[in-house]
Amino acid sequence: MSLEGIKQVTQTEESSQLRRAEAQAQAKKTVADARQAGEQAVAAARTSAEAQVREYMKAAEEKASKHAEKVVAETKQACDALQKAARGRKKDAAALIVRRVVNV
Image 1 (tube, rainbow, N blue to C red):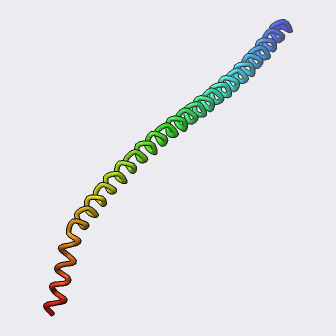
Image 2: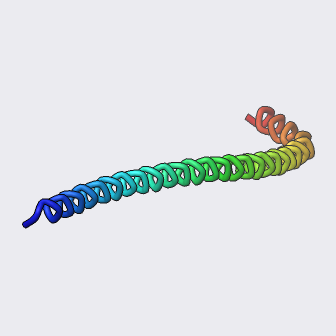
Image 3: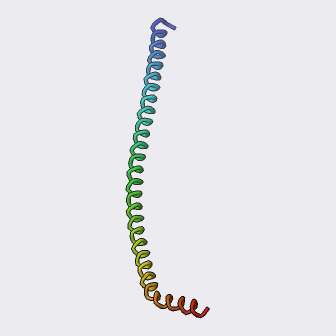
């Protein structure tokens, strides 16, 4: 093999190694870029999910508050009705107690 042939083989090997190194560097950069994009996508999804959860919690708290107000109003109405009924029977109860005490 001539000196020129050896130089040509050496240059080809060096060129091949250089292209291989460039390809590896590009692959590493592509992986790093993809990883970064994935992390950003996860962070954005997490932020969006957290905002949605806050909205759901706010809606649930408002609904629970309205339900609690309704239950309190219904309970108050029931108590008022019981008190009214009790007042209506107060004279009868007093008369029954007097009869029992006097008859004893």
